[in-house]
Image 1 (cartoon, protein in one colour):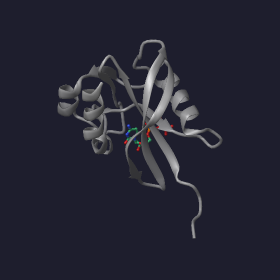
Image 2 (cartoon, rainbow, N blue to C red):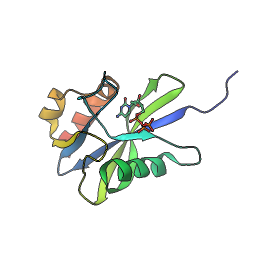
Image 3 (tube, helix red, strand yellow):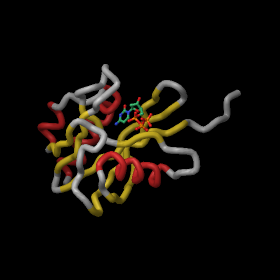
Image 4 (cartoon, rainbow, N blue to C red):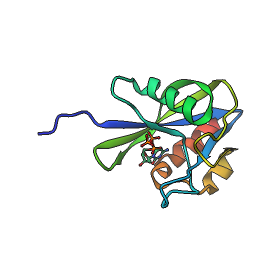
Length: 133
Ligand code: DCP
């Protein structure tokens, strides 16, 4: 039996002033141009919060505070699992260092956005969070 822990990919629901930050993927080809919650793979020895903060520094050039989970676990191929976290900005302005663009969306634009398929699992939770704020 395989008892290894699932490798986690953590994604950030960065919310500020009632809007959510989306980042546009550059690849792979089937995802290029689509919008995602930024994040990446947690490395061995990192907590999810540490890994997500590192990814957000690398990808967006910002310092963040990682909050609680939002939405369901999304299974990925190769024994990985994708999880979303609420995140607030501590310092810096999000910049597309590894994406082709970033943009802030309110609930109506989020619902209309061309999200990567995995992140669509969180759409209702994200809209509810934005509308509650
Ligand atoms: N993913 C997703 N939705 C997100 C973030 C990631 O569906 N909001 C998926 C895309 C990939 C996997 O998770 O299948 C890993 O994401 P990245 O390629 O963005 O992660 P890393 O930046 O860690 O990848 P690498 O280090 O391999 O470049």
